[in-house]
Structures are given as C-alpha cells and as structure tokens.
Image 1: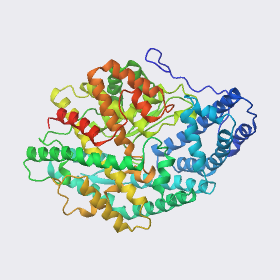
Image 2 (image 1 turned 30 degrees about the vertical axis):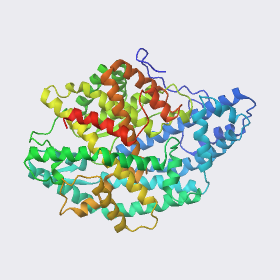
Image 3 (image 1 turned 180 degrees about the vertical axis):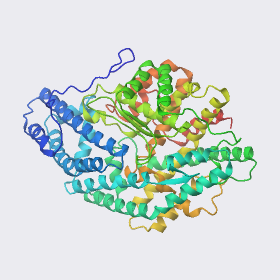
Image 4 (image 1 turned 90 degrees about the vertical axis):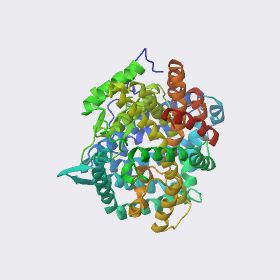
Length: 574
C-alpha cells in the first residue's frame, strides 16, 4: 500500500503482455484473450496467476480507452479524436466484452470457484464476476456500443453552447459566474441568456434522451428485466442497498434537509430585503459583496491546492505536483471542451488525469480538491492487481472525493487570506451541501419515474420533473414566467444522459463525507488514518465494510441524516 512515508508513482510493470504492444485494433489483443481462454488451470496457484494476467490485459485496455476519452473531451472540435474513441467502442470493445464473457464463464464454472469466493480477498471479485456473467447477453453488445457513442452526443451539444455578454463570447460555465455578481440586473440578464440558450436545444436533447431511453429499455428486456431501472441497479453492482433504500433517501432528504433549505432561503431574502427570491437571486452573496476570487490562473489554482494538500498530508501535495509536471491536468474552461469535470484513473500509468472547467470561482477550488480526492484514492489503491478491485463503486469513489472537499476547508486560507472571505467560502461550501442533496434526490427520483413509465410523452416527462421540483424546492424562490425553463431543467444534468442512475451515489457519499469530517474535526490524525486505510482497500471489501474502515456508517435513514444535518445547521448558525 502507498504511504506518506513512501511516496512514489510506480507504473504497471507488464509481466504478461509484451512491453511494445500497442492497441490499434482487436487483432492486436485477440491472441491474449485466446491464450487466457485456452490456458490449463489445474490448481489455485494457476488460477490466481490467470486472474492477475487477465487483469493486466484489462488494465492496458482500460488505459487505451481512457486516453481516447480524455483527448476527445479536451478537444471536442477534433474529429480524429472522436473517431479514435468511437472506433474503440464500436470495433474493439464489443469483441472484448464478448470474449470477456467467455473468460467469466471459465472462472464461475471452475471447480475452485466456490473456494475462491469464500476467501476474503476474492469475495467481492467473485460477486462482481458472477453478477456480470448473469447480466451478459450477446444481443446487447452492439446496442451498448451504439449507446456509448450516442451518450457522447450530449457533451458535443452542450460544449457548443455559448452566450454573448458585453461583446464577449462565453461558455455556459464562464457565464455562470455572472450569476454571482452583486448587480441584480447583471444576474437576471445572465440567467435569461443562459436559460434561453439551453432552451434553444431543448428539443434536440429531448430527441437524444428518447433514443437513449429506447435503447436502454431494450437492453433491460433482453436481459430479462421488466425495466431499465431494475437492470441498471444490477449492472451498477448495488449489492449493498436496494431501490427501497433509494426511496428512503428521497424521504430522508425531504424531511430533514428541505427545512434547512427553506431557512437558508428565508435568511437570504431577509438579508436582501426581499419578500421572495427570483431564480437569479440564489447564487450570489446576499450582502452584495463581489464574488470570491480565489485565483486568477490554473497555475495559481494548482499551486495553492498543492500547498493545501501538503498541510493535510505532504504525499498528497506531491501527487498533485507530479500530475502537473507530467501533463495530467486540464483545468481551464474553453470553447470546444466538454462540460463537467472528472478524475480518470489510468491503470497502467498508475497516475490519474484530472479534467475540469475552471473559471476562477470557489466552485473550482472545491472541484480540484474533489477530483484530487479521487486522485489520492487511485494512488492509495495502486498496489491492487485485480481489475474488479480497482473499478470502484461510486459510493466508495465519491466518499474519497467529497470527504477531501470538507477536510480541505481547513487549508482555504491559502485562497482567502482575509478572514471574512474565508468564512464566506466555508459558509458557501456548507450551504452548497445542503442545497445539492435535494437536487440529487430530485434527479434520482426523476430517473426512477422515467424508466418505470414506458411510453411516456415529453409533456408527461416535463410535468413529472416540475412536480418533483416542487417537492424538492423552496417556495421562497419564485419561478413565475420561467416555468418552461424549469420544466426542462433536468437537461442540465449530464449524468441523466451519459451515466444513468449514477447520481444518488453523490448523496450517499456526501452523508459519509460529513461523518468523516465530523471525525476529522474531533481527531484529525485518527480520522485521516482511517480515511487512508479505507481508500487503500479499493473495492476489495463490501461497501459497508469500507465505510466502517473509514470510521463511519453506511446509512441514509431519516434519523441518521437528521443527526448530520443538525451538525451542519450548527455550523451555519441556523
């Protein structure tokens, strides 16, 4: 396991594949799949060697796909990058998936499979492989390849959205900064332009979503499921919680978080001297102070973040600097760059890549520490040699990143040397947590409805989203005159298009992160040690066990959520 005392980046040493192997077509890797399929496996030692070799092949393939995805997102105007990615998912990945199913059969049917599954170090792996084998259908392979290409259409559409403000063309990420301006007229103008630009493509995005739903539902039916929601739960490997648990999460948020949201909006309205807020009144400083400007350039952002990581653990700072030195950061927003942000683990380089759209605001600071938490997770689990233990469920992956956001608040004086600004930043971070939990619940509840109501119309979809937003929004915010924008608000959420149902994990992990932060405030060394040990497990243990190692509970019951919200309310003076 990587430790603070032994910081290093150790790329994967190929022991099975030739070092000179480069992947341009299926034929480049076919011989290795065929060798794995035909290799004798007479005993446990041979089986474990086979698992390691199979994982090495997967690591190399995953990194090839990763770089094609990264380049395509960094440069959406480069047709050659899009073509390279599409070629992989259309021509290579379907062959890999079909052959991998044959290898899964070898494993689950092996006489030693049950003995392997009974071992703690292989229990989760066998659970994952057996589930994958059960879900596999040959007829779904080409549909999934089509889906991967179709899902990228969302990023292409959104990356081309810009507005003009004072003669300057701005990406929507850049334009969002105007919603933090103290001048109310500027905020309203920006809101109208951003929403109008999104609405211009509302029909295109509805068309895209209709096609995605159709293909996803077909995949579910092919696998014997009544709907894609139930199939997707199985595909995501949600072994440790159920659909009903997600509904419990929705209820817990509505009952315990929404009262805090309401109080925050009431306090904001009082500070602004308003009876009710408008949609452009929710992001800026309510006392009229200018937006926080934590940095001016990406280089400054990295420098300050690295020094912040140094304070938490010097190894974390060295990791970020190493990524910068090797060109594994692309941080600034620009035209023809896909929206959003991500940390992409690279299993052969053993050094992750961070992608984001920084524009100089507080959210960028939060995002870099968030993605930095993912990067730390990749580094701490880099010793793991089984692919199924490296591919993290989001409930675990997001625990690492969201916990780091909160832990890092103790270092934000690097960005905000002025005490008043520092307090503002911390308050905005905690208020953001309170506000995002209802949004997460709404996005998740919406998708439950979408995939359990086949044949619904666009009007029904819009009406359902509006009703859900009424449930998870404060009546203190007046949307009159903009109901049509609100009804298509779900289209701003990338996950709905590209990674369906992958969103509630943020809420689950946010609760876990609050618990980690509570422990960290009480005893920083002990909490940080538990955090490191949990991350070093990768996915080699069930999710509740990983949370337990981190010193917290895997729990989203109303009582537990209320306890955490009371802590946050105290910090916010509510």
